[in-house]
Length: 398
Image (cartoon, rainbow, N blue to C red; front, side):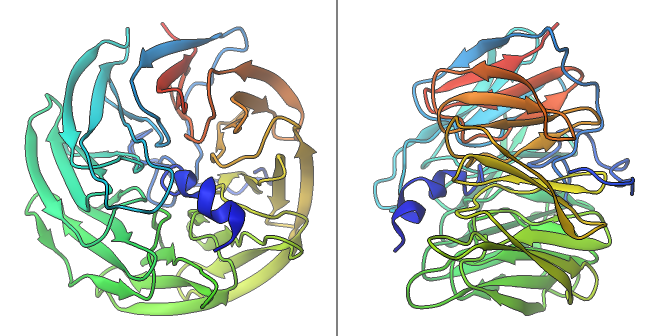
C-alpha cells in the first residue's frame, strides 16, 4: 500500500470556502451536533466567532491520543481517545470516551469503549452517539448512562450523521464495508446494511435524499464514491476515483456534493462536483494538490481543504476555479478546516492551529503540544481541538 497512506492518513479517517454568496441552510441543525456541524458536512459554524485576543490553553489532559473532533452537546464537551496508528484491529483494549464541563474542563462522566475511538461523536434527542474500532456504536444519555450499544461488522472509523431521528454511519476494514441507517429511538435498522467492496473510512454525507461515502483503495482496485438512497438503502456506484478520498468526507450545499480525490505521487488531485439528487457529475477541476486527507469546508462559494504539502486550498465552486492556495510551511494537513462567517481554522501535523480569513490571509497562529489531526469544533466564541499528546485545547472561553 502507498507509504503515506499507511502511516498518517488513517488518523484522519474519523478525524479526516468562500463564494458571491449562496447561503447554506443549517438552521434546522444544532451547532456542533456532529462532525462537520451538520449532515451535509459543511464544516461551517453559524455561531459567534473566537475573539482575536483569545489564547490557546490546555482544557483537559488525557493519557492517549485525540484524533476525533470534539462534540459540544449542551454544557458538555465530549471526545474519545485512541492509541492506534494502523488499521490492525486485533489488539483491542478499552479506550475512554469523556464528557467534560464546558466551563472548566472537569470530567462529568466517562465510559470505556472496547477499542480505540477515532470517530467523532454526534448528538440528537439527549443522546450522545460515538463509534469505536470494536465495531460498536455507543449511545449514552447526557448524564453518562449507557442507553444501548449496536454491534456493526468491522471498525467504525467515520462519524455518525444524525438526520430525521436516524444515525447514518459506516463500518468496515480494508476488504469490506457496510453502511447503516439506524433509528435512534427504536434501535432498529431502516434497511439491511449496504455492503461495499472495501471499507468506507470517512464519514458519510447526507444530501439530496442520498448518503454519499467513499470506499478504500489499495494496489488491486480503485476506490469508488457511492450514493445510497436514504429511504430505500439502494446503492449506486457513482464514479471510479483512483485514490478517491475514502479518508475525506464529502460536503454539500444542498444542491451539489463536492469531494476532492487525494491524488498522490505524480498525479494531481481532482475536485468533483456532483448533483446531490441524481449523483451525476456536474463538473471537475484538476488541482495542484496531492495526498488530500482533509475534508472540505464550505463557506459561501468557497470549498476549503488542506493537503500533505502543507497547503490550504480554496476552490470557487461558482466560478469553477481555484480561488487561492496558501503554503503554510508548518506541516501537513490531515485535520479538516472549519469555517465561521469571518475565519477559517485548521490544525497541522507540526502542532499549529492556523487562523485564516476568507481571502487566504493568515490572521493568527497558535502552538499546541502535539500533532493536530483533530478538526476543531466551535460554539459561542469557544473553539475546542484535540492533539496527539492527549490534550484537548480550548481557544477562547468564559
